[in-house]
Amino acid sequence: MNKLVVGNLVHRPLRSLISCLAIAIEVIMILSITAILMGKLDGFKTRQNGIGMDMFVRPSTINNFIGMSPAGASIKVADIIAQVPHVVVSAPVNVQITSSLDSIYGIDYKTFNGLLPFTFISGGPFQHPFDIILDDYAAAGKKIGDTITVLNHPFRICGIVEHGKGGRKFLPIETMGQITGTEGKATMFYLRTEDQPKYQDQVRKAILATPGMSDYNVATAEEYLSSISPDRLPGFNIGLRVVIGIAVIIGFLVIFQSMYTAVMERTREIGILKSMGASRAYIVGIVLRETGVLAAVGIAAGVIASFALSAALEARFPTLDFVINVPYVWKAILIAFVGALLGALYPALKAASKDPIDALSYE
Image 1 (cartoon, rainbow, N blue to C red):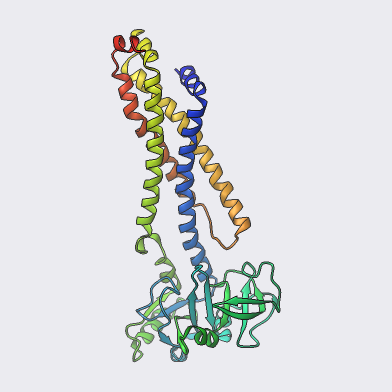
Image 2 (image 1 turned 90 degrees about the horizontal axis):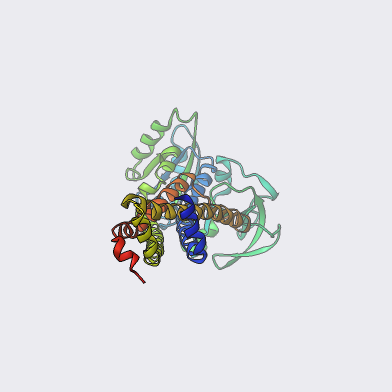
C-alpha cells in the first residue's frame, strides 16, 4: 500500500505540491496571527514588568490597555498617594498611543526613574521641555542630539536607554500634556512600596479610603499583569478563532478538491483493486494515507517557514514582538492534520463505494 501511495503522489507532482503548499499556508496563518497577537501581549507585559512597580493605580474609566483611554486623573493625585504610609515612590504617567500603535510615555523623570533607574547607553535625563529619551530599539540609527518628530512635534534626543522599561519613547509629562491637551493629567500611577508584598493590602485600603479615590482601581503588579490575557481581552479570542477558521477552511477545500479529483481520475485503478479483493477499508486507507503524507509534508514546511519568518522579522523589525507561541505550534499541527483528513474523508468514502463493474468500464 505504501508504494501505491507514494507512486500516486509522485505521478501527480503539481497537485501534490499545491496541496502541501495549501496546508503550509494554513499552518503559517495560524502561527503568524498568534505570534503577532500573543507577541504583543507578552511584549507589553514584559515591558510593564520592567518598570519596577509594585502596585498600579488608575481611574476606573481607564482600561487595561494603557493609552487606549484618555488621561483622566490629576497629576496631583501622585502627591496624595505618596503620603500614604509605606508608599516609597508614586510616579504619574501620561501615555498616548499613535496611529501606528507606538506608545509614548509622558513621565515625571524623578519619580519614574525612582521605580527602577534607567540604564543609559548614552546621554542622560531631560534637560529641556522638548527633549526625548529613546530605548535602544527606537533609537536604531540615531544618536544623541538628533531631532525626531513625535506627535507632530520635533524633539531632541537627550538619552538612549536599554529597552524594557514600559514604553520606547519618553517625554516630560508636562510637555505631553501641552501637546495632547491633557495638561496636569495622568493616565495612571505606578507605585513602589516598602517590603512588598507585606504592606500592599494596607496601601490599597488607604488609597481607596482617600476622599475622591474610592472608585479608583488599585492592583498589585501581579494582579494587573495577570489581567492582560487573551481570556480577559474582549474580542481577542474571537479574532483568533476567525483567522484559524479561515485557515482551516482553506486547507479543507484544497485537500477536498485534490483528493476528489484524484479519485475521479483513478476510477479504473480503484475498480481493478476492488476486483482483486480490496476491501472498502483498504481503499479508504489509500486515500487517507495519501492525505496524511501531504499533510505531514505541508505541516513541516509550514512550521519551518513560520520560524524562518519569525527570525527574519525579528532581525528586521526588533520592536514587532513577533514571537511564535510553542503551544500553538502543536495546536496548528493538530488542526491542520485533522482538517486535511476530514477534507479527504468524503472522496475516500466515494472511492470505496464504487462498484467494481462500473469502475472497470469507466472511460
